[in-house]
Amino acid sequence: MKKILLVCNAGMSTSMLVQKMKAAAKEMGVEAEIDAKSVTEAANEADKVDILLLGPQVGYQKAEMKKVSGGRIPVEVINMRDYGTMNGKKVLQFALDKMEA
Amino acid sequence: MGENNKFIDKFSNAAMRVGGQIHLKALRDTFATIMPLYILAGVAVLINNVVLPLIFKGDMLANVQYWGTVLTNGTLNISGLMVAPIVAYMLSQSKRFENPLAAAIISLSSLIVMMPNVLEVTPLNAENPVEVSGVLAFGNIGTTGLFAGIFIGLITTELFIRASHVEKLQIKLGDNIPPAVGKSFNVLIPVIIVMAFWGLISTVLYVVFGTNLVALISTFIQEPLRRVNTSLFGVLFLYSLGNLLFTLGIHQTVIYGTLLEPLLIANINENMIAYANHQAIPHIMNVAFVPTFGMIGGSGCTLALLIVTFFFSKNKASKSIAKLGIAPGLFNINEPVIFGYPIVYNLALMIPFVLVPAIGIAIGYAATVIGFMDPCVVYIPWTTPPLISAYLATAGDWKAVVVQLIIIVIGVLIYLPFVKVNDKIAEKQMAEGEFEE
Image 1 (cartoon, rainbow over the protein chains, first blue to last red):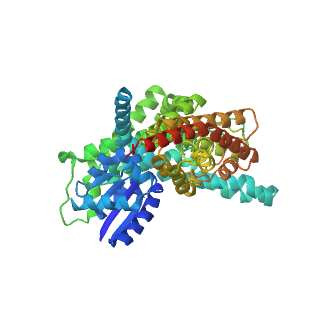
Image 2 (image 1 turned 135 degrees about the vertical axis):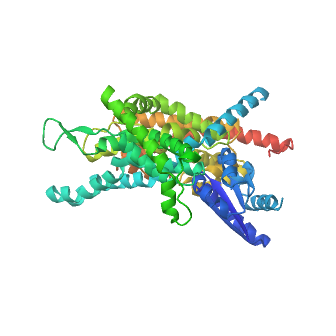
Image 3 (image 1 turned 45 degrees about the vertical axis):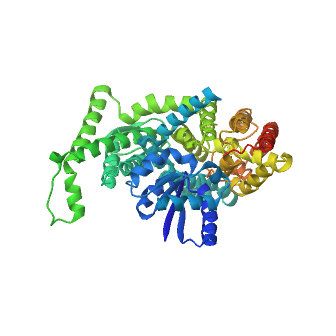
């Protein structure tokens, strides 16, 4: 079971992407726990997940999130276009690729 | 755009570094945490002054209004007091300090250490003030003490963390002692050092200068900063700068959350208290006003963009993003539109994105100054839908809704030509086989 955590400013805009990713996961037959949190809350949840995906508007927090997760897990910024069009499939694939690497 | 790109890159990088700066981040996180309390205060003020008077009269009314008064006491009137431990806790967490609770408690104590010991208070129904000691005044631990709380919270935490990591200052009690006890003894000396330090400063300030830290910070830092940043031009400049950042893909909170929001919150707090006491409302510019008239449908007043797209755009991609964006947009959440339309790095839309909010704020300001609409006195959540937000923020002035509608119409008129330009550019790019990634 892969645990994916999306991060944005208030945890609200990414929550929509989460719904789309969950649907994509079901379609692809991938078992994943996907959630969205604000930057502050994500810092506390970092040790419970397998990857942190930052919304592009909080990309400036990447270094800080990397520190917070202690380098244990991949911390990546979601592609602007995929984020804007709420492309759940693409973002999920991106996450899976990064977790493989 | 070669040269422009370099400048934009430099600007973005600088903004990113500012955004990631841990003290500013602690500040933003603190206000995000307290927000529900302020909103509760807003609801309490609203109910106390608009709803209850419809139901009760006279002595009965005064009695039930006690409810709103005590809620205000527990929220607005202790703002300064609350931020000190919270900002300390947030900073400690960012720094991965192992005892954030201790940092929070020491910061709270330190804030009180810096409070004046003797105060002038005017008793109820009296003319002249008297000197008292042994009390904390809402005037000092409320909004006026906001910056003092932040200042002390941040500095105390830095000092405390550094002192705690000095091996020589640690008292180790051994493994048989319960962890909680061992932890507090471990930091005993740093606690003593930090607090004695603040005590010394407090004493010098009082004995030599006849003042105290809260008064100093409030007079020399908070007030001037508030006056400048929350002036009409201050807000227009800073808010537009934040929106500009957003068009570069960086959330406007990097600027707004640090340079504007705390001060705008101070302003709405004073408004709420004035409103509760039936006094003149001091500040037009506040944290309820700015989103209500400058962020209609989300940053950049994108509700206007969505309306234009639905009715006047011929671009299929734009229309599908608009459809996707309307539901969250009604709650002022519009990142999908910002990144999906896209507005980021799209000059045609960047211009109205920055222009329309500025115009909205200016119109709202003018409407209040000439007395057409009431000032905003209720701290509503920024996710309150348009039209409802104007009504609630002004505690029930329908004319504010009219002003908001006017701004939306003007927004539509401004976005219209830019959307047409955007459509043309998109059409050309499709024809030339160029796809933006």
